[in-house]
Image (cartoon, rainbow, N blue to C red; front, side, top):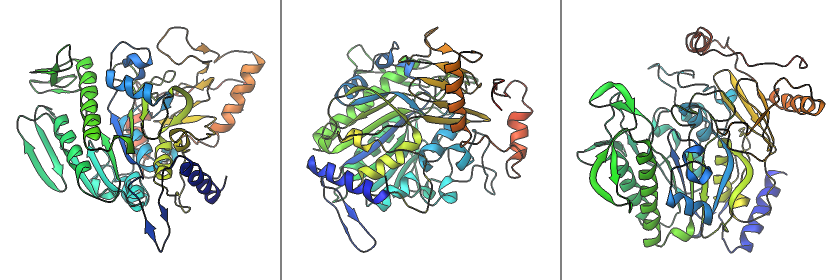
Length: 463
């Protein structure tokens, strides 16, 4: 479908739901308060299996309610590592385009740190939403260079050193370093969020909010030891006790849920709940389980919940496939805009799902990390090792036998399906290890690492 036709269909469908949209062109701009506010909250290092919602064991009553009254994707992919995921999300591009393949493999600036993606690509999540006349803010953990390069108008960026004690809040707040003793880091960024969305404005707002929780940190009292950070303790009634707990992963998950619940209450109190779309997801699998893992989909698969009570009818589990390249086209379409025709975006908008309109979902999703590539349809999966699985309707890869390993199968149907998937992978190229800008990084971080380097399996029937 052409871009102009797709926008026309979207506008007509949205009007049927009485959701006025913005019409944008080079000469004029008009908007109404009914354009949705949008927030994308990104948790750090958490797998679906960590949530009771997905069949795990940790309760999250707020997220459960959001999923029940909205939807949650059963199969959503990021990458197995944090910086490649953020590159995927902020640019709408897979790694073979962004060239951010790992936390240590990417184009670098003069300071030898990652060159900000906003300096390499003219259109990012922040800049596109700002161009669509949204008030925009980046709130939380950055990891991808100078926040000012991404087109967000405002920011509150966590200042995280090698020893990160979350019982103290230190943030770059719109260009000024602000230190708050006795304030938990997560509390400080949610305070900024609530202040930002409460400001008087005729424009809707967009917030990208990557959290630090529940990512492990160096123990402030024992820097050689890593574990879940300090978080405020909650009692059985989900009330603060006034104490902190450390090295308790479940406590971190509970505290995220607690903070999101408070945010939703703030939206309700300020009359914004019915006009706000909340997306919540993880950035990669959890530490010790999926993070940096090539097996099945436990590295790239993440929880992903969408809650939009004024737009989205209660749906619950959704079997449509999504990956993080889909976030930019979705947000831009919800804003009433169109993607720039002079750029390439790999994603597919799921805005029609949120608006309750007919939706043609993706046939496959893709992820890339180091020299490894993943590809998935609703029933079939090729993982980073080159292993091939029939997943059927199962999604809990942590359950033994849930996925049928057909890597070396001689079944004609399995072979035919794999060949079809390999034809898709041909369009998603593996890294060029001889890339002059990155070749030394590839040798140091991948090719010469005997405990890390992995050559994916190629079945004999493939050319």
